[in-house]
Image (cartoon, rainbow, N blue to C red; front, side, top):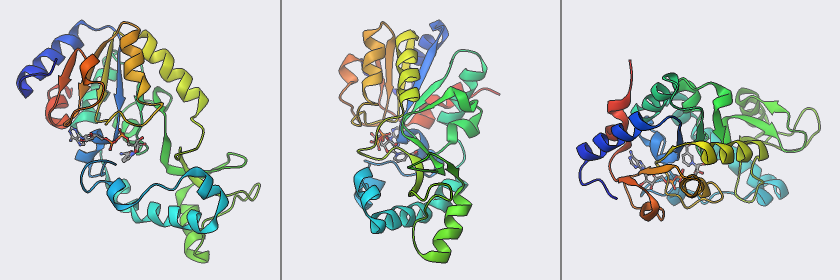
Length: 253
Ligand code: NAD
């Protein structure tokens, strides 16, 4: 059912939150647009500017790796100055109140951790862009080190431990999904009684399977997104309004 207005959507959501014992939020890029980070598919979003570099290209070609890091550093100011918005803060309030056991996110911007979620309670399906990892041995590298290498050589770095390429700690198209995060997200979706999908176009799979799974396992499903998604018809409540305006009333003190 689509909420007829923002205020009725907020009211219904408030009732559902009050009646739920275990709420699992699932977030996409739309929750971070208020923080100044563009999403992928909106007009002017990242997709319209750059097609993503698939994992096999990153592995195969030095010029693809150089381009990937050039793009990442071009975004650095945007990521570095982003602060949690009303949506992040509202979810952190519900987490602190004990209503939310953990959050599933497609986002890579680290803003749920900054807003107050413990690191181990942020299930990152697509990784995190605020640090890097070697694609061979998995060693963590900090961005400052990568930046220094890039400035000195003009090229993407290789791991100091095993000489394999170093990539942001994100999951690229064509790269395997992280098994632990997939397992935890599955358990969370199966065992909650309210699942709230926020700011996702729900077209990137397998991530987009989680709202559906939660619904199949008996949870109520709420979708908050300013444009239609393919799962609106199975949702108990669709709020087609701005995320900050919708979740703002749930920000605690
Ligand atoms: P998406 O760009 O496909 O969809 C975002 C949705 O949010 C769109 O439907 C858009 O209309 C909606 N939206 C944007 N701002 C909104 C607002 N203020 N209020 C209500 N709705 C709003 O994003 P996705 O489904 O998360 O898939 C994109 C993939 O790209 C993700 O897997 C993610 O890894 C990556 N990504 C992440 C970030 C980030 O970490 N912040 C940013 C861009 C892309």
